[in-house]
Length: 359
Image (cartoon, rainbow, N blue to C red; front, side, top):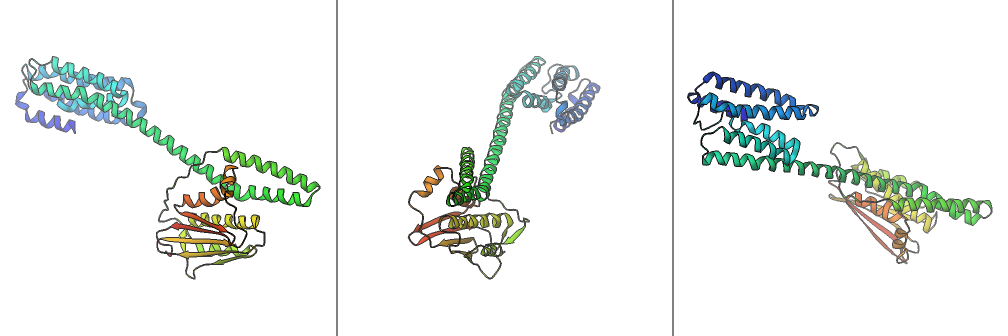
């Protein structure tokens, strides 16, 4: 754009040239150097100090050539605003210091080649002097912001992955270790020793999970082309467990596969808690309701309920059954998990927003 501006203005002011051939040569140099610079700056490995120095040298040479081709008393230099290309290159590469150095060089040459400095000339030079450092400072700030953003994204991704793995470990390994420990203590003998070892490993694994940073990043984004599953069908598979009853709508409840997997894992964790704390054959009921903007899943049992403060104590001990496998998963989906417990039993009400659960 600055090249086009310079070419048009020089053609318009052609009568101002005392040496037209020299003016044409200057314009040709600008066109050729612009084409070369665009290609040279395109590759990061070619953005060397030599290229930047040559870019600035060409701009200075064209400024210095102005009185030769136009004569004394000229008003506008041949390159005009075209010299801003070299100025901005220095500002981008060397930040505010480079912008200030290039601006000082260009401003000094522009003033030295003139016989008289007018208010307009002073204004142009002033803009160059403040523009270079400002652009350089902004480039440096943007780079720092980009680095901080990338670091934050990596940290958030790592924390989310740790939370996901912690939930998976709880659903599998920790549940098995807890069961082995309890059954070993009941059987006694060599089984008791096996149970004790399982308990030690469970404790160590819980400690390892507890030491990891966990960040719940409530950002939901399901691509429109993502695969879907019928939540009603997937929850119905849980009836294969002993004493579990599932009630769901007769129509399909189509949701993104990832959401369905997470909701099934949440319900599975609730049923695991029923088996562990109420009894392996204790009855449990799962109810699925679908609405235009959300799905609601209820998991209920008729056990003795959860004592007051027990969940907070479990979280403090690093037991992630409720905080991770249930509430953590639901929070990742942007929903809520409400617990009601007492002498009547325990009921989880899980609400997850969706676009249109019926598809």
